[in-house]
Length: 576
Image 1 (tube, rainbow, N blue to C red):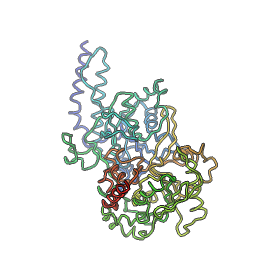
Image 2 (cartoon, rainbow, N blue to C red):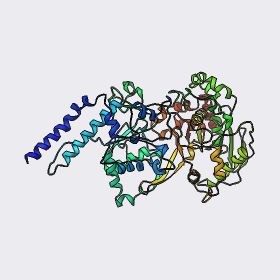
Image 3 (cartoon, rainbow, N blue to C red):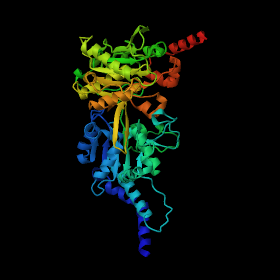
Image 4 (cartoon, rainbow, N blue to C red):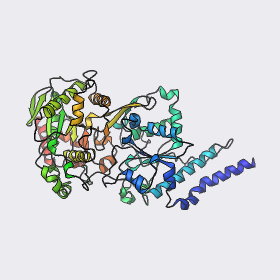
């Protein structure tokens, strides 16, 4: 009995005081980070906007062993295609670990930066605090009022301001998920417990077995919360960006970190210029994508010829805005254009090609609309997409209608997709620089249909945000005999994902594409990240601007003046 009492008091003493007396020991020592943390780089690109990849930071600057680093792009689609669901990666590492050789998963991407000494100290302290608590709890016949420190799952907490389609209209305002650009950490023990929990028959038979994963960072947070009743612990030092140490960036009564442990960088040109910023250091000028090498195909139907088409024509589907010069006329991006004018000026009079494809020949605002002869399916549009793919191939590859410029990139968009052309061109230049012309490209906002139980997934690029393929991929699609619709109204973007899986071409996720309107995303993503596209418009331009928030809409399309919006309102009033 005396032994148990001694053990209990010893553990409680350590639980309360250990973090205090161990801090000095691990200052300026990242051995714990090197030995006890698995880095999961859940991203498709190595490079960052500072021309330093997260892999360089881990391998070279901090000497993290290669066996403790997992990189998503090296494992899909050939080795482990299901890894885009994230959890299969964590389960596999737990299973393969020898004698529980690590304590944490640290999940990051190319946006994430961190202070290795502070991170090592934090994770070391939190793990020891949690382990001591668990030892106390495991002592038989001991009732303790000590609350769990809840150090199992940590990050920068965020929640949806309103129910979002991206997160299945979750209504729980108390549920939080991490801002993944700043990184988040999960204890190995938590993943082990989750694996045991979801192996139960109750889980296997429920709705989670097979589903569409729209945001894996949200999904894993929800799963841990639902299965283990473990919520995300907010760490103020996991900052959104480097300005987080300034009190003006924090809500009243919130904790302002003295120094950030992690933070995120951005590809955004500036707060006001929302376009993708191509790193120009070491950029080969030959990599700059000529707008004449790009085609945007707009899929529409007769019903929206005089509703949606005039709007997108006024906003972006217009030669005036389909070029690099549009940045020069944008008051928010003018400085960026001027500083890079020596690279961009050769292309200022070149424009992206537009093909508007429908089920009825028409001409709207001098925009010619072609009839595909497919009719219009009310639900999925697989037949229409299949026809569009063959139309583009015949026009631009077989017949090479623009013989002066070989088309490199094809963008498949809906008639209610809002694109920022300058941001799109900069993104394509970044991709062209790092992947080259010989790569098979299928890129955009990646969703996954899959099962973490059966360990399978089919990845697809969601259509509303815009889908980018290159001429190599287009040619392979056209020549693929198995790449056909199961039925005419099969969902077109999911069918395309199925076809690329047949061709063994991976769906590459690229940030900046959005499947819904801005109100479906946390403001951090809208105001700190670059923007290439959003999805959905209202019945008129003023209503669309209102839905997107007029101030934010002005950042997207500054050429749309208040006078134009007022004219639209007045014309609608006159019609009444």
